Length: 319
Image (cartoon, rainbow, N blue to C red; front, side, top):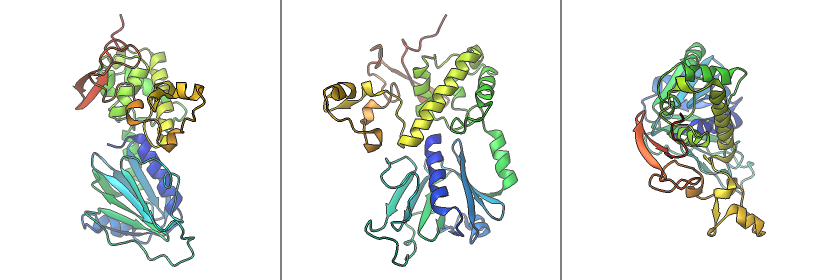
């Protein structure tokens, strides 16, 4: 499931390529025909993300609300002018794909419009220079602005917004429950946007026992946990992927990035596709492998319906 950084990038993409345009909105699949008709021909005025929820606002005070769930994905396409914050040159993200026209096209030729939809396209948005198709989403609905506010009211604070007071609200929600920390971080009413990868990685980075009850975590530690989540998710927006390890753990031609740099070998930037897939996480999907810090074998267990990864030494219960 795409985590909060991916949905934030999607909101930026929509904002860049569609804001201020009257859009043709349709449901090629037919399952969203009624909702599409309410938006067809209206101008998109804003795009925002909160956690894993995407909200596209239109000038008739209606909102397209999308939650991708496990199988949802957006695809974008258009002419060479149809680019945005998370488009050309960015790393590929879960839940988002792009297909653009001739790179030599300067936009002077008439735009021929989107191609025939492929597969079960729930909703298509088409503007002057390109389109966006949604498939497989858990939620796709046209709602009022008041309905959107009600959805937001049910969600916890979003680390990518990091508004004044959010750290305290997060700490209070966390510390009010006896539920294990690893389960609380997956509860979107406690914190919005954290998924399975981020929960495993930030708990390791803070050396926290995944089964520690939220109520047992001191307020100061809860706030430090919030700040680390803010940091790694902000990096995720910039990088287009989840990278939680520092460069000393990255490998390049059999050596670490740090050693390569010391030897004068250029180290590619993260946005260029580096580091490699096995280098980017401390514990996520590394069960049976030695911990990068202490060499203890990383373990796996099911918690809150998802696989949890942790180091039993680095994250051992504190007395």
